[in-house]
Amino acid sequence: MNIKQLTGGVFYVGVNDRTTVHFEGLWDLPKGVSYNSYIVAGEKTALIDTVAIGSIGEYLANVLSVTDSVDYLIVNHMEPDHSGALPEIAARFPGLRIVADKIAIGMIKGFYGITDESRFLEVKDGDTLDLGGGKLLSFHLTPMVHWPETMMTYLASEQMLFSGDAFGTFGALNGAVTDDRCDVDYYEAEMRRYYAAIVGKYSPFVQKALKKLAGLPLGYICSTHGPVWHREIARIVDIYDRMSRQETEEGVVIVYGSMYGNTGKLVDSLAVAMNQEGVDKVRVFNAGETGLSFILSEVWRYKGLIVASPTYSMDLFPPVEAFMKAIEIREMKNHVGAALGSFAWAPGIAAKKIEERMAALGMPLVGRYSMKMAPDASSDTALKQIAVEMAAAVKA
Ligand code: FEO
View 1 (cartoon, rainbow, N blue to C red):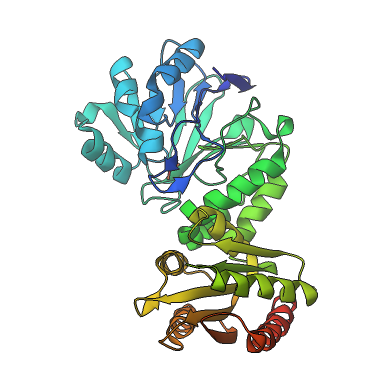
View 2: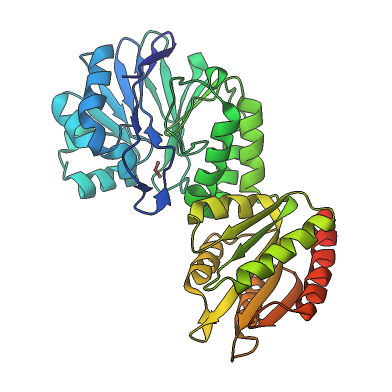
């Protein structure tokens, strides 16, 4: 049990999950994940979001350790990692009213079959709910951060924003709930990975939400995953702003596939050449072996992107194809690219396909090279040229 009183009348009642292997059935969780839920207690008591259904026993015990009476359940986000325990909570507290926007109410009916209209209190943008005791909640619709029903809830007395997935991180909580007692660098890396994998596609909506909420004083940001941001709010909001503007930094990510190691040798030589050109931040990922979220996180951050693929059935090698699809879905911007292909008997196909895909993303290309079978002296010349052009581009 990891209950923490954040301020007078506000409690963290979330749970850790170190068992689930893949978040959304897709994304690696080597450090686990937390599902955060909060209680705001005035004269009435509100629970803000719930947790995944697999943690219902621990979660209910957390809630009951703080209160045996819940008047409102605020639903900021309906993805089942936060709404999974909703039906159990609604059943456990039969007088509870579910506070949600119109789209969320439709989802509650669809996901969980709760159709009794008297259970719902529909809220619109800017509405408030007075819990008494100085606890006034206001609701701010922030659609598509991360689903269409998403909203954020603000508790003015504590300058506390319950932000849903926004500002969330992978990584279970390791003892501390607030950032003043935890390793912020550790969670920053997991926030970047969560953002690139889960929220990044919706960056224009994140920007809208940031602008909309810019006037709210922030003492605490209580996300649905990871630590409560308090001491580091300025740093975290700045990173989030830059990530959602798709601002990129000096550095180069090389993403490759390799069946028998020849394309792997090629990119190793290119990494050396990049380093010789003065680029210190070079990240090389084998797309067939590294979880996609780790790759996307670094690609989101750094300006240079070099993709290398063998030709496979007259197409890209499947793990590279999956990577290209992932960056297309996320409409990645503000990169410069280079395309490397390898082949044994069908010249140029892989490099050309990568180049076309990068061009469709609006990514300027600084070089292209096709290797026949294995690296040779001509490869070194081509790689050197690409490294020079790429280094100049990422430093510009
Ligand atoms: Fe953490 Fe979009 O759910």
